[in-house]
Every structure is written in structure tokens, then in C-alpha cells.
Image 1 (cartoon, rainbow, N blue to C red):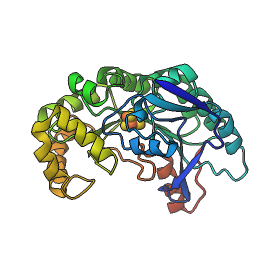
Image 2 (tube, helix red, strand yellow; image 1 turned 45 degrees about the vertical axis):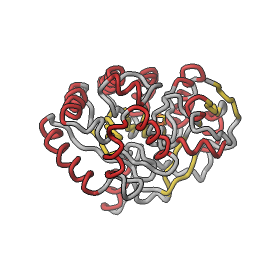
Image 3 (cartoon, rainbow, N blue to C red; image 1 turned 45 degrees about the horizontal axis):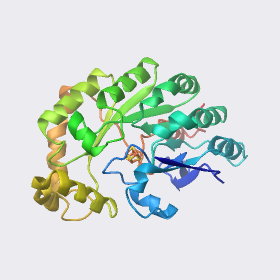
Length: 312
Ligand code: SF4
């Protein structure tokens, strides 16, 4: 792996907002590129903007914004900052391997806490456990919404699809630790991969383990194959599972999204399993792709009551 240390000019990225009363959503990505190397990663094509032309560079050539916490603190101190929810883990994983070396997250979370900004965080990294005491302190004063992404509960398949990630068991143990620390922590069982992880056996094993870990909720959706990701994923499928290529051609015949028929079939398969395991379905923030901050509900309730939202 190669780490490129850069000094960032800005830390907060503005995305179209989905929280009523706040015009924008905000994200922070301390790293560009991701050593978790998921074959389905939708962020892979974004590495081209950094002039990395080989799609495999996304997994091994990681840009590190070494001054991100310092820049963030200055941005949050501006009088114009309205404490909109900030999402981490939307484009690259903040708890990927580089974080063990660079320790950028404690500074980021500390800056968000000091400015009383709501935080949502999605990761596959078990290093999250290191920062649970800090997150629990932040949660004493306002919404902290965590989610662990765990798509694959078959260790051999996981090693093929997400070669740089911790095991599902280690991620589930992190969910359990977060819940024991008093934090809300859901599981993103996504993407569901047609033919590979959509069997009743796989889904049932997944929901059993997620329920045992005490997850707050589950979010799931079928694989998306957007341009850039599509070629990379289908080349991988051709190499490892050529017997499923015909099904993928059918399921993705209309473009990036699985056909409506497949999505309905999957929903009908999952709904009774969720009920059986007593799990609640969570919701995704459409603006960031991360877990939805509970501050959205607080703002909505305040609007309905005609008052100012009190986030902290
Ligand atoms: S962890 Fe997320 S950002 Fe990293 S490679 Fe996997 S899908 Fe992409």
C-alpha cells in the first residue's frame, strides 16, 4: 500500500440535504481510496479525479488528509456553521487500515463534539471500537448514529468480495461493543448480491447473527452497478462465478439498478425473516448514503410544533 500525505484545504463537503430545515447535508472523508477493497465499491471511479487511472489503485493508493481535523475545527468555528448533521464513511471508510497509523478520527470527532454537531458514521472497520468512549461522550449531548456495514456472512465469499475487511464476526463484536457502550448502532446488510448472498440460508444466518449482536436496526438493498463499478464487478464475476453471468445480465438488463421484479422478490424474501428475528428496518440518508441522523426527526418534530429544533 502507498499512502500519499496531503494537506487539505477543506474538510466539510456539501451535499444536497435531506433534513428538513437544513439546506445541505455534509460529509467528511479523511481518506481517498480504501484498503477494504470491496469489489462492489461505488466510490472506485472517484479515484480517477485524482489521476489514478487503474481501478485497482483505489484499493492500494490511499490519499491521507493529514491536517483534516485542524481544518475541520476552523470550518466549524465559523459563525455561518449551522450544526447540520455531518456524515462520515459515505465515500471511503474512515476506519480503514490507514487510520491505525494516522489516528485522524479522534481529532475529527473531538471537533464535531466541541461544536455540538450531530454525527452519523458508517464503517466496516473494527477500529471504531477504539473511539467508542469518545463517541459515547458525544452522545451524552446529542445524536450519534452508528452503523456497521456487513454484507457477507460466508467467510470464503467475504475474502473474495471484500479482501481488505475485518471478518463479519469481528464486525458483529464491534456492533455489540457499541450497543454495550449505550450507542445506537445498526447494520447495513448491503449490498445484497444476486445469486451469492440472496439465499434464504445466507439471509437467515445474517439476521440471526445481527439480532444476537443486539443491532439497533438493519438496512438492506440490492447491489447497484453504476457505470465504472459495473465493468469492475462483472469482470470479477466472470473470473469467480461465470455460472451466474446470465442471471446478472437479466437482473441488470435495465441499467444500474436491479429490475423491479428482482427487488420485489428480494423484499418478499426478507420481510418475514426480519419479523422472525425481531429486527427493525432502519433508513438510509438519501443525501449521503449513510445511516440517517436522528437529528432529522428532531428537526421535523420541531417544525411540526412551530419551534426551533434543539439538537444539543
Ligand atoms: S469499505 Fe466502503 S469505501 Fe471502502 S472499499 Fe468497501 S465499499 Fe468502498
